[in-house]
Length: 292
Length: 275
Image (cartoon, rainbow over all chains, first blue to last red; front, side, top):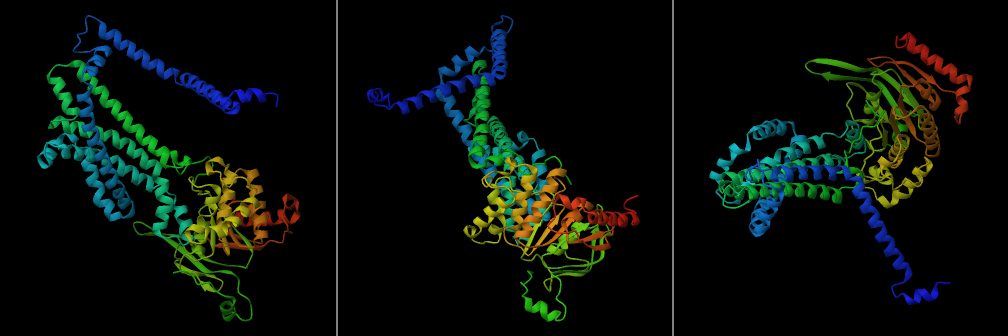
């Protein structure tokens, strides 16, 4: 009550002001603690970058072998439009290929778990497909689907499919037999057991498959662009290589890994948004003493 | 496939003079096919009867077919010989009115304690709202008031098993089948859970078939103890448990408790299980 005149002088209202101030203080505290938590990581990356700068500026190291980070940045900054254009082409191929792999991979995993016959039918074929180096597939796919993005999308799809199917199978097979017994004793149908128990319990594994799959889809798309293409980061990489443009070459490689990191963490974010908190790790935890 | 709910009339029609027991296990045998072409006899001619609201414990060494007996009673396996009759009707498949608890709590990690308890209601497509209050009161009865919205990962092993017991009781089953439910729990919590279970079945009378390795547990909880011998599981002995009720920690110092435990141990010794 003593403070009443002061409150009148502040149109914002002192409580709101206080809240904003304390919020700002909290954000600052969190920033500080973030730096403290990640100090080791930042230090290591900083040291690597410093070593690179030093090594790049040594007179005995020619610029076409190891361009300095600064020259890479300058080269990338000179024509960011072209890089963005090729990045978008590659990203589109990767995302389309990955989505196809999800759309086909999950039902395929379900079928493999559901039927012994389909397991015997699909499993060897999948393993065989995985065993073929994707570079060897690329020329065939180009013959079939042409120079355009379709052949790259297909290659990204083929590369991403395997981990998605395998992780779906592993995730779905993990449900303990007693849980199936429990559900059946309640009169649950196979479909109910599947939707209420197995599918949800498989979700962490399935997302693990997505994370591997999307980075592999990137590899697939770039390999496709290497073989035959007229756009995309893989194609642009070849152009830079033929022009002996080392800073651009390094810039594209760094860009590729940054894009992969971005895709990987997008899946992680999706998992955080879609799954309830306990499912961000494995569903059937083995606790001490709960053996047998 | 499902057993029709048998009214008292049909039971009376079968045995007009003497009322039939709720669960009758008649000359039950179970052999598992072991590839390529051998058979593993798990149960051999087991016969016993359990009255309505009776707490029956089955005690025996590892691999004596105790769990198989529960599966057959739930109608989840088909016996190789003999049959199980519930309320006068032979079991031919999974039947309505069974609640099961296993050694692992089998809680679904992505559901809250309350939603785990309500799982049977969902599976049976019963109205959730009609059972929510019952679920809350069951959780309250086992000391989990305030934990309704907690995820299983936030609960201790003992608390998780309590939730599993509530899940087995939510649809008011006529028969509770428990397969070593407290085997994964530490000894102190184990005793507490046993008394919790007795309190629950006191408030909601149930016929219970309870499998355990522990002779003491078998005696402390039961009205009847069925002693199974080593594989193939045969009944060594059936004992009526006259330990006074309600049971408590004091029951352990009752001379009758020790007499029963010693008798069961003697049976195992004679069968070569204990040396």
